[in-house]
Length: 281
Image (tube, rainbow, N blue to C red; front, side, top):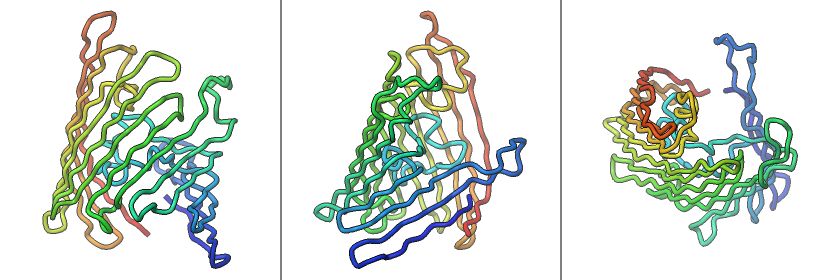
């Protein structure tokens, strides 16, 4: 990922925010070297912050730091939908109310209310969230969020919680997702724990998807079914060898079944082993 970001104070009451970020993918067979990421222009004041452009929806942002395998092939988007980055939208983040709660909203412009054929089949697309605590678990040792989403052809709500207890971080997410155009609906949830052992973060996560909107089911199922049941277990570790360099590895196991024409069909198991290094500059 490469780009620029910053802020400029234009008066005692207002501050301009800006960010332009791209994903550079020059080692695969894809000819699309640059892919759009969060790019926006904003204004911050005592009344809150407003952003215009492309950004993660506040529904996605409500995950906080609970996605302990985020931005890898064991990301929570394998189990849950709603992890959207959208353009042509407006974002609002309130100041912290009573030094406790922050209210947030995403609203997409009308030209995003269309399906793949250009038909205006989706409902108004917006997302709302309320957060308490600190997602980095520094200012407070807890983070709690509730969020609602109508973006991307689904209606969904989620609850997120994470707490730091000494060297342990324990977190979880629950989500209900319902299609706006079909009868598909269900719950998804996961629980995880992170233990800091002398700078090495040991991580374990257990997840269940009974909705079928996540990437694992949508990619693995040859025919859409009902009574979906996908489970995942992921274990891994990461270690920052310097301020800028992180090494990591994990092993993820996915399995499940669903019903097709009344018969229970096993889904193909998927076992993933990953090692990597990340450099922040």
